[in-house]
Length: 243
Image (tube, rainbow, N blue to C red; front, side, top):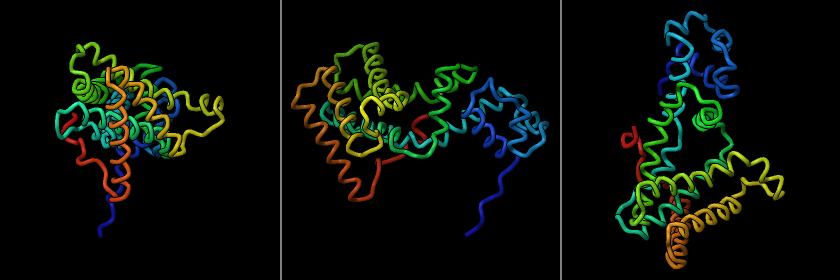
């Protein structure tokens, strides 16, 4: 087994930039501090990236590229365009996305940059929207369209934003929620309870009846059990499907 290739100066600059930009945002971090964190000459930033803004863009793109979020979105890939399957896929997707946000102990640079761009937009926001948010939102809208084919494109977009907003509420306001309910959100049972509530609430809003909702949530739960038993994940990675 060969040893991994040593990190290049460009890599160490990106590592340092990811840490510092993720911690404090674009405007609060200077190039000199990044160079010092990377143990590199400040001139190396100009050599490899040209300027601070290009370094930031490269950092955001790399964080997006190495995110594990693609595996979660893979649950939205349908084997057949049937409303029942789409409803089950949506239920499963909600559970896995919520689980990733609440139970993953490792920092998620991609999510950190997205939240920072939402609060303090920089010129990188167009990259985040074009290369990350829009492709995934279109995928979610496609599944919702199978569940509720009578919805207009604008209604599909609103529904997708509503579902994602419910999930992100527990990520962004986690500290407040745990203090209000005195119950941690990183327990499997609690994650399942919240995910099933979001799924039920969303599917009701899309016009599904109780029978279809119950079957969708039950199917999603059964699929989770089978994956845990067999040790398998989503059928295929999204790499190559999403730009």
